[in-house]
Amino acid sequence: MTKVLFVCMGNICRSPMAEGMFRKAIREAGLEQQVEADSAGTHAYHVGDTPDQRAQQAARQRGADISQLRGRKVADTDFEAFDYILAMDRDNYSMLIERAPSRHHGKIQRLLSFSRKYPNLDVVDPYYGGPQGFEENLDMIEDAVQGLIREINRRN
Image 1 (spheres, one colour):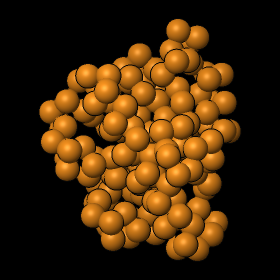
Image 2: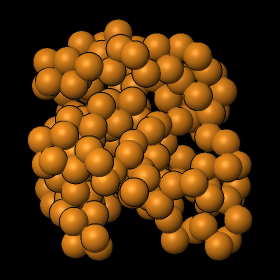
Image 3: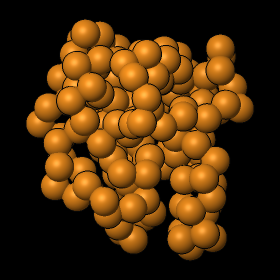
């Protein structure tokens, strides 16, 4: 079983959208029995909260229901439990690297490192903007998710 953790700051916008779109993609690829997904935040601002309504709506319009997800903070055990720990941006990547034992640093990457269209960019936090930010995030996430699935298929 390959386990993937998507990480943003509060776990109510970017990382739950990434989890939802990834779950949809693994279902479509027939990989549900081989791949597991979760999401978390580097901060505890929204532990137990549902994803932002705008994130839910944007994901739903693309075929992913994230309404059942709940915010949580990255746990120390996540570094051992997951094969891929994918940060949405440089800041969250840095926080994960600082926190993780060095033996797990290779698991930590930025999500868009798997993107063909948006490599080396950040999935910018859309929280303080309008609906367009969520749509732009999903464009980036969908592209990166396809690259991640290619990578997982290659490794298995």
